[in-house]
Each structure stands twice: as C-alpha cells, then as structure tokens.
Image (tube, rainbow, N blue to C red):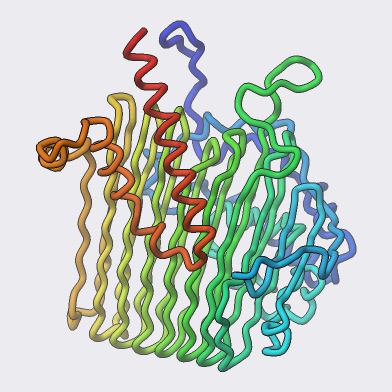
Length: 462
C-alpha cells in the first residue's frame, strides 16, 4: 500500500480478486428448492467460476483494476415473493416487473398485453419450462468468469415473452431496485420475441428503499458496506422480430455492478440497444450480439457519464454469421474528476457472413486532468466479401474549436461546455423508447453535470 496525497492507496487488484464471499454453500442456498437438473447446472457453473480467468481476452487484462470493490461483507439475497397486479401501470407502459433487493417482486400487465398473450413472470416460476434455455449455461458466454458466477448464483429473474405477430404499442418495464448495504442481488432476464413481433423494453436499475450512498456509516460507525448486483439480459429474436431495448443505470455510488447482455438475432430480425451508465462505484458491462440470421441487424449505443472515482469497464462482442448482416455499434464516455472508463470491442466476421456491413466506434471525452479513458476497437475478418468492416476511436478533452464556435455566438464558456458534453451523450437519450424515461435521463445528466462541475470549481477555488 502506498500513500498519495496524504491518503492510503489500496493495492491494485485483478478481476480474479473480486472479494465477494463465494463458496459451495452460497450455490446450494441459491438453488434451494430447484429441480435436480438446475442444481446440477449451478454446480457446473460454480466449477467453471473457480477455474476461469477474470478476463478471457488477454488484450484487455492490463486495464482491469478491482481495488474499488470492497464486498467481503456482502450476503446474497435469496428467495422471493411475487405479487401479480400489485403495481399500478403508467399510461405509457404495457407491462412492469419490479424486483427489489428485499426479495419482493411485483408484476402488472395492461389489458392489451394480456389480450395479446404477452407473458411477464418471475424466472424461478418458469425455470422447468425454460430448461432448454437454461441448462448448460444457455446463452451465457462459457469463457466469462462472471457470466458463470451469475449462472451459479441467480436467485431472481424475469421472463418476457411476446408471441409471434404481436406488436406492442407501449414499452415493457423491467425494474431492479438495488443498493441496500451488504446485499448482493444476482438476476437473469430471459426475453423472447416470436416471428414478426415488435416490442420495446426499458430496463431500469434504480436505488432501493434501503440504499445508502458514499459516506454513509453503519451501526459500528465504519463506512457502510457496498452492495453488489449481477444481471443478465438473454435475448432471442425469431425471424422478422424487432426489439428496442433501453437500459438506464442510476445505482447508488456504493454498488458494484456486473452486467451481461446477449442477443441471438434471426433472419430479418433487428435489435436496437440504448444503454446509459451513470451510477455505481464500479461497473463492468459486456454485450454479445450474434447475427445468426440472414439480413439480421444490430444498432447499439452505450454511454458513460462518470464522476468522482467511478470505474466503468465496457466490452462489446459482435459476431456476424448470416449473410448480408448489419452492425452499427457506438460507445461514448464523458468523464469528470478522477473517474475511469475502458471501451473495448471486437467485431468478428465469420466465413459464412458474406456481404457484412459493420462499424464500431469508441470515443472518450476527458473533462479533467485526473480523468482517464482508453478505447480498444478491433476486427477479426474471415470473409473478404464485405460491404464494410471498420472501426474508429478517439480519446481527448472537449474540442476547442467547438467551444470557440459557441463562445463566438455569445454563449458563456461553462454553458458551452455543458452543451457540448450533453450533446455528446444525446444519442442514447434520443433512443430511449419511453418519454418519461427520456426526461428522467436528461434530468440525471443535468444533475450530474452540475454536481461534477461544482466540485471542480471548488477544487480550483481551494
């Protein structure tokens, strides 16, 4: 341990040292009451967890540091009580499933969704009927240590099924409420859209009623324990289906979050991801898109707005398998104070993927001298007959020419910087398929900008 600026500095820790108390007892507790095949699946996942490296891609290992995760005192949330119809739907929602880290689950569906045969239920209640998607790890990446952790320890989850031909006018909301000190919530979300179906899903990761923020203390007077969240979104789109999926992460700054998202995209199907990462102490996100169907497509935008000493680690894998597939992937980060972000991406074009059109962009904007970001885009091409295969990246401060242009039009410097930064992040906001969520996200970005710039101004004055 070294000392920097008069404060003790924790030793660097790799992904293999998460500090979370995981053993066979925790696995058995998570699987209490499960059918024998599911218990066996959990045990196999735990065995994989024990031997897998923290980062399967050696190109990315130098950028991992888990010293911010202090999870030795966390306990896993097990069991749940589902209460259908206990939540009132907003006028612009077709369904809602809300799970809190106290174990409670509440569900509501509109009359239109019920009439169309849409299903939104807790995963544990449907596990046996979904054995084909769960047994053997299902769609989760077999080489990812933390995906296997989720497979072994999930105790809560949601199942969303939209039948073939159904076109929902309003979004389905999947809400996770997290942040109670010392609690670890591990979840899986399984989503299926039948042939020709069209739907929008808004995932919300918000503070729970018992959430604590940085600086809070427990009964002993010491800083309150961190909370942990691990979650997956496992999507299957049949031929011609369209899914617009947005995620708004505003967890408290005492939460360590690890997320996996995976989409299997069929013929003529498309998925549109819009993900905003604002909260959390340390956030690790991985997205896997598999374009298995001919003429399938993915459009993905993920943004980070970091402040204080937040750490974000974002990875995107897109695999083109079918013919004439299209990928358009964009990651952006704006970093205040001493926050950190890594943007890592790989596009793979298989031999079968004739006519691929794929683009990957990763861009970081450092808003202070202490902020750090790194972008690592890459391509792996086995099929030369492509329409396009390219990547682009940049990391740097606010563009001074943009700033000069706005100031020359009479806009004060502080306001000009704000316009540039929030405009940089707007691509995700505009893609959120729920007006209220869009407004809320803009409010969060405004508030974070104000808090971050006030801190910078205070340091400058001191």
